[in-house]
Every structure is written in structure tokens, then in C-alpha cells.
Length: 233
View 1 (tube, rainbow, N blue to C red):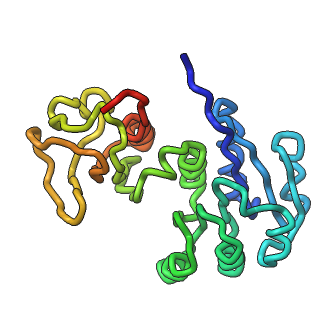
View 2 (view 1 turned 120 degrees about the vertical axis):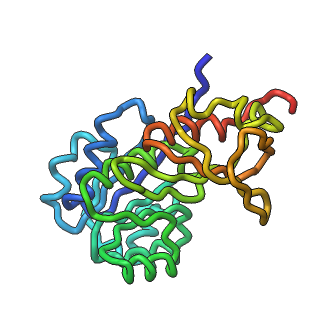
């Protein structure tokens, strides 16, 4: 029996090339069960999507009152796709938006964004925009993954908190992450201690496991590791 999936409410601010890449990817997968709202200061950026998304707004998102009037705080994820975004991110932080993904143009910009409350920082490449869309459309990724770092050639490193009681007290070798999900376990963090991966290591609830693999495989293993079962432990 397929469980009901709560609609993910996603707001994209800034519909330039980067923002368009995110929107197009989200729209290409109607099974993602999302409500999509777009905001930009320029109407011409929005018109191409007016019949495909739930709502579009022409607005200046650097203004806190504007954000409040649009109920931006209620969205599960807000993506700030415009490059000139520090004032927008600051305003989002002020109104209490919990999950913000923002575009950084360089390392200094990235540091400033982190200081003012950005959850995820991405580069402005079109391919990264597509990957960002995958991340925000999946609740397990945004809620249970501490970080995702792109390595090269499509491989990423991701650290995931273990919530699935089917995994508790099982050895890494018995879980067959490599054969089932095509990912490798590289590191385990338990409370304040770190452990290198070994087949004999027994995983416990809330262990932070670092995996390496392709993004799509990381998404699959994240869904497995964070699945909350109703069975008694």
C-alpha cells in the first residue's frame, strides 16, 4: 500500500537562467507532489511558467513586508536563485523561514550567506540547478541529510542520520549498501566520536553515516535510511 505523501510547498525567488533550470526540472516530474510558487521582479521571467505553476508574483523579495504578505514563511523550502541575494536571504531569516537554498558567486559570498542563515549553498551552474530541484522535492534529503558535497563526475558525498529501525544494530556488511544502492560507506559519527567504515561495524539509531555515490543513488539510500517504520523496535 502506497503511503500518502504530503505536498511539498516550494518557493523559487529569481527566475533567471539558474531559477529556470530548477523550475523546469521540478515541472518535468509531476510525481514529486509539490506546490510550486515563483517570484521575480520582472514579469517577463514569470510569464513562461504562468500556466504550469500554482502561483506567480511580481515582487521585491528584499522587503520583509512583501515576504510576509505572500506567506513565504509557510513554504517547506525557499530557493533564492538570484545572484544579488544577501538582502533577500536576510529578510527570509528575519521572518523565520526554516529551509533556504541560495546561490553563491564565490567563497566570500558563500561565507556571508551561511552567517545570515542559509541552509544550503549552491553554485549558479545549470546542472546544479537541476540537482537542487531533486534535493528540495524530497523531504528525506532536506530534513535528514547534514550536507551534500559534490566530488566530481556526478559523484557526491552525503552524511545521513539513521532513522530506520530495520538498520539498527546491524553490521554494515549485512546491509549490502554497495550491491543494493551502489553507494559506499566512508565514515560514521556517533555522538562526538568518528569511526572509519568496516564491515563489522554495527549501526545504531541516529548514527551519522557518510556515503559516497551518484546523486540519484544517494537519494535512494537516504530514503531507506530515514524511513520511519511503525513496527516496534
